[in-house]
Amino acid sequence: MLQAAPVAEPSLAPVLLETRALSFSAGGRSLLDGMDLSVRAGSRTVILGPNGAGKSLLLRLLHGLIAPNSGQVLWCGRPLRQACPQQAMVFQRPVLLRRSVLANVRFALKARGVRRAERAARAEEALHRARLTSLARSPARVLSGGEQQRLALALALVGRPRLLLLDEPTASLDPASTYAVEQMLAEAHGAGIATLMVTHDAGQARRVGDDLIFLQAGKVAEVGPLATLLDCPRSEALRAWTEGRLMFPNGRALPF
Image (cartoon, rainbow, N blue to C red; front, side, top):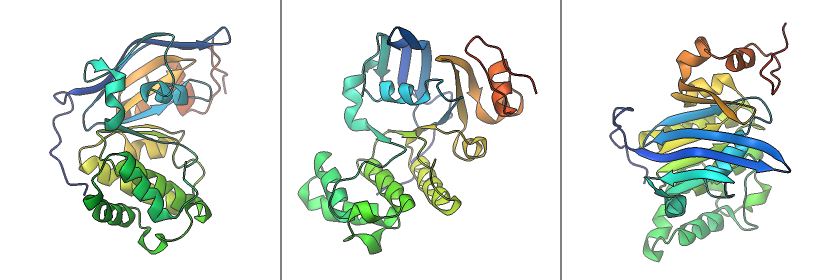
């Protein structure tokens, strides 16, 4: 069960995840360049930036799905590989097995090493959290888009991770489904789970985030309190983004 956890003062909470001079290139192009970032326990961080800024790539590096060309990703000060059981990731398109909703949950519990005696109760809890109890026996792949994403989020939370990574999980959902996903994220935050989420929606960013990482052309343009930076951008890159102007890799923005 996701139980409420005491939330430490943000500046006092321990650092879960950090990067040191993180860089990645492919095809002779630098896609991420010298990133120094940190994510604290229990925090809610949003990654914003224009298309091609490196947002999704950064998440994959932080989750260990790909390796950087240089620099480090550390989990509690140690190599990232030790974080595997303590992280979970939700993609824009849900990754589900060709099984029933319940079977997907049971598989996730087994993969997480949950004891057989606990799986039934934990599966029931996960389905209730995602409001999918009535669809437990339905094939997962015939669910609606919103139902599939709620299931994907439930599967990520079933292992009770310390950090949840989300790559535009509501990009193709209607307002009601988006609200349901955001409610699940609020419950996860209440249980002390840190979230790091990519979105293109400034309104959603304000609802689900406290801290902001803004990327531009593979570099960190701004980091700090989300509401403050969105209201009063310090960089031209973030100012252009909030005003809906195009920003070129050379740092110039199209005027109105």
